Structure formats: C-alpha cells, structure tokens
Length: 392
Image (cartoon, rainbow, N blue to C red; front, side):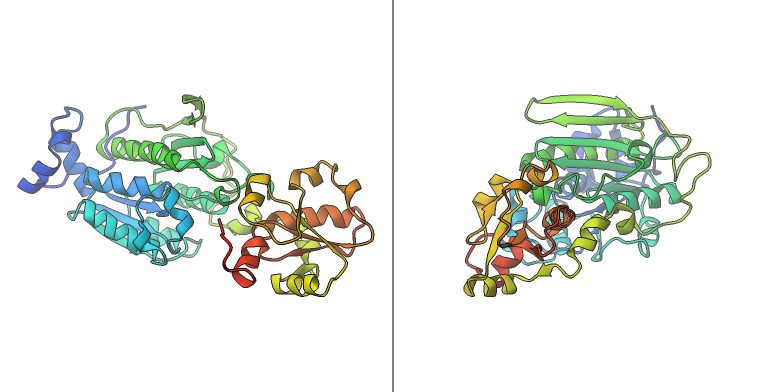
C-alpha cells in the first residue's frame, strides 16, 4: 500500500548536503524533496545492539536529521561479533555514547539525542512522543509488546525486526493503516519456549541483513515512496538464502488496536511475558544456591550430582568442573529422569539460571525434593570462582 510522506520537507539543503547526498538526489523517487524530508525527520532507534547498529549507521549515512537512541547497556566483548557500531576500544563504554560517536563519525550533520535509560512503561510515552518514527531493535518480548502498545496509543508507526541464529523477520506496524504486532502475535510464547540470542546465538551478518531492511522501510515511510511492509511479514532464511512474505491482517479482536480494545493503557510487560514461569519461580524459591555455595560443596566432597542443562555447543565453551551435560529438552521430554541418581543431591546449572529453574520445576514434580539450581549459572560461576575462564 502506498502511504503519504510521514514528515514535511526541510526548507533547503546546504551545498555540503547536496554533495553528500548526491547519489540520493539523482534517484527520481527520492530527489531533493525526499532528501529534505529525511533531513527534517526524527527517528528513534530502540537499542544500539545487533539490529540497532546497522540501522543507526545507515540512517545516519542516509541523512536522517535527528536520531534518538534508547540504550542503557555497556559494550561487552561478546557484542563485537555482530554489533558493528562498536569497536574493541569501546568495551566497557556506554553503548549509547559509543553509538553516538560512530554516528557522528559517519555523518556530523546528524543530531543525535541519547536516552541512556531502560525503556519502561513510565518513560516510553514521553520518549516516543518526540519522534516521527520508531525503529525497534529490541531482543526480548516484554520490550516488543511495550513498544507496540505505546506506538498504537500514540498512533506512531514503527519498523520491527527480529533475528535468531540464521532466521530473520521484519515488518512495519502502524495501527492507523494496518495491523500491529499484537495482531501477529496476540500472546507472548510460554516462558523459556523461545531462547534469546544470548542463549541460542545469532549469525552476526544476519543483523546487517535485517537492519538494512528496517532502514529501507524507514526511508520509504519518511519520504512517502514505494510500498512499505504494512500488512506484510518478511521472513528471511540465511542458510537457504530465501525470502518469503506472509500477509498479516488487522485483527478486529486485537487487544490494543481492535474494535473493542481491552488494553487502553500500558501494563506490566515483564509480568505479561513472564521471563520465568510461575512453576519455575515456585521451584526456585528456597532451592537456589550461589556459585560460592556450590564451590564449598565441591571442596567439601558433598554427595552431589552437577547437571548442566544447556546445549552441547554451549557446554564446549565453558562448564563448571565435574558437571554432566543433559540438555533441558531431555528433561522436558521425560527421558532424563530415569538416569538421575537417587543417592546424591541434584544440582542444576545453565547459562544464567533461567533454564535450570525450569528444569528444577520438572524435578520437583517428579519427587526430587532436595534438588537445587545455581543462581547466575555458569556465568556467575566464572565471575565469582574461575574468572580466567571465558563467558559468552
């Protein structure tokens, strides 16, 4: 569907701007008018990570006049495999500050506005209200639903992207002209069902593929050209090198943009998405030990069986000494229960403690009442006990 330009054009382009954007200006569909609209545009990028990196860099290069960045995290070495806006020298630095420096290095004509805070229900409306368009580069469901609901309530369009391992998705959600994210995904998946990129991994270059699609859609919306991905979901399989599209229709019963919405104000999105299931929370209550406690048990020759519930490729990177690998799915299928020892206390661990809490709930229901899990997982173990080992 063709849509009118999202912003009015700026009054003029300077001589320097004409030189810089000349390859845009000679495209008939963009031209002076389209470039002036980009100059006058205010775009907010939620996150300066995998998707935010290429999105911010290409929007800066394209001449988007004002770029806002919402980011509260710091640059970690594990980010550098895909978050190309940051460099080795930026490790430990604020991601927002690092991203700003790179953006200004690409195009000093861009005005960069930083929001160095976690995006939450109490600040999202004020932040979004300052911008014409939102580019969503988040990697968790709670923030995705928060972004969607705030955009609907403010009638703001936003460009959405998602990445995992070799698969990517992208779409444009704008409730005035088509569906919203909740029309596509009315409910979040059950806690623990869909691993995050930190747990499942992501091919670094996939971020560039999806991030550049997001910028392409942003430019189309701002300049009023082409056919934006409103009502269409673009799906990319990097292994098979295939793109396909799925139509997404506006749901008349949608909780936030439907005919009779039930979500008319922002809600508790952490509770809505549930990082850990209620069963796991109940199982972990009183049955969570620290890495230091586990070290004391190991040194004291306590009768324990340490079971790592991650995947084999994760176990190869780093593990707790003496642990045995039994992936989480083996417990969920029931295959692993019969091989558990009855004469030793079961100690579960994963990367950070989320998956092990889910498995702990399975063990508790199967009668292993004294089983425990390690809060903070193998990452906590490395930080507290063996700092010379790698993390991921």
